[in-house]
Amino acid sequence: MADPGGSQRAALLAVASLFPVPAGATFSYGTAGFRADGSTMAPAVCRAGIVAALRSLKLGGAAVGLVITASHNPVADNGVKIVDADGGMMSQAWEPFSDALANAPTPDALLQLVLQFAKDEGITLGGGHSAQVLLARDTRPTGEYLLHVAVKGISTIVGSVALDMGILTTPQLHWMVRNKNRGLKASEADYFTQIAESFRHLLELTPDDKGIDDLNEKLIVDGANGIGGLKLEQIKSNLARLDILVRNSGKEGEGILNERCGADFVQKEKVLPLGFGPNDVGVRCASFDGDADRLVYFHVTSPSKTSVDLVDGDKILSLFVLFIREQLDIINGEDNKGLLPTRFGVVQTAYANGASTEFLKNLGLEVVFTSTGVKYLHKKALEYDIGVYFEANGHGTVLFNDEFVSRLESLTARLSEAAGSPQHQAASRLVAASQLINQAVGDAISGMLLVEAVLQHKRWSFQNWCDLYTDLPSKQLKASCYFYNYIMHYSS
Image 1 (cartoon, rainbow, N blue to C red):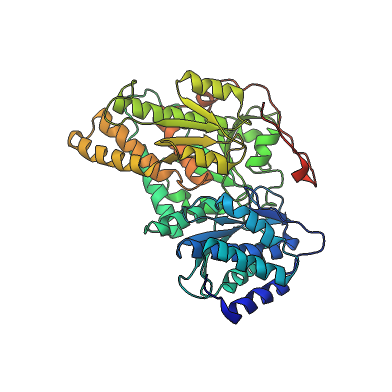
Image 2 (tube, rainbow, N blue to C red):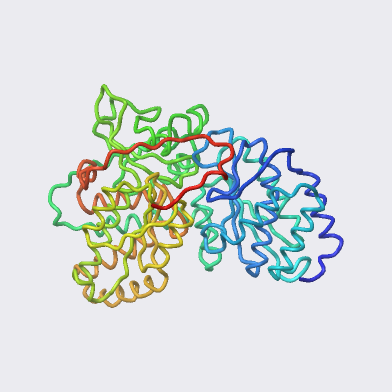
């Protein structure tokens, strides 16, 4: 590490003095990053900005991301998390340093932590590569100020550039970081164009021999009064064969973020979100969480009841698995020894309903379990040619390995000589699915569009989907615990 010089040292000391850690406060970087009451988050956000800039330097100046959000938490909360250069979550190896920096009690302690960490990691301060950090925030009232604080933290590292990408869903920022580092188009307009065009392509590949169309094109979406509802309003007019009505859209005066609405509320309580009622009986409904990285579906069961038929992440996963398995069987035959041998895996956690796991295993699929947390699921899914993971809460995606996608695209090109053949169409569907579903992180908008495309492909109603299997009875509750680090768990 080069001597950072007086200007770098002075900048670190100054910013630490500007945003001191309150007495008694403790910040811990988990799967969701740092989260707390938004009014107390400035010190952690500033220091996360420093971490993000250092991470970019470590990766040779590659873009990393920083998003201000608290997802499904109440509107008074806020948080910050860092997006790694591949579009995924920040390397777990950097979490201890992030914790130490966020809790450094004095400016000098912060300075010494940064200098020692930079030395240990071989990061050059005050020269060499410049860092670039893409920033975004959701619609929370503390977000604008905290983004300003993040910029101050990033700018503390000499030569760093902070690029404000605007008010976005969390998955949009993950997608942008991934694309930017791959030399691909990475604006919000590019995101919308890619998912709309791949959705349209999937619909064009819908078979003509599936019988009577039992699917209502009308879809009502609960946007949790967050950023996802606003973004869906922007794109819905460009989505073919889908009539979307957004409620709890996030527009001013419509409601409060995550208050009796959103995917977390619907999935845990299994009751109607605000804005839904007797007139919605028989209509397919979906729900996003506050930053649009979770997705669940539901059905109003009766005009006189507030309970819902819930389709959670387990059944979304099962629907995707059936669709992908069908295309692979067309290409390869059921023995998987055809044109595109594929290692296809499903990743779940202990929160998965046991009925879903049994259903998947009965299909002959490889089902593996990880610790709870998206960072563990995502890492495991990357080991497969196609890896599907979802938590019951609706957070998940389908990952297509780069080398597999290359083989798939080459095969599709070869099969184009017999355009319209079952194998060519199946391969084309998989290509379109790989372009539609977010390859960086769970994404409620792109996940919803893949659900809708698969339902139209199969000519399935909501009830057909519900009938895949019967969930084993279960109940999820939240338990508040101030000293959560003291809780121990043991694998059975």
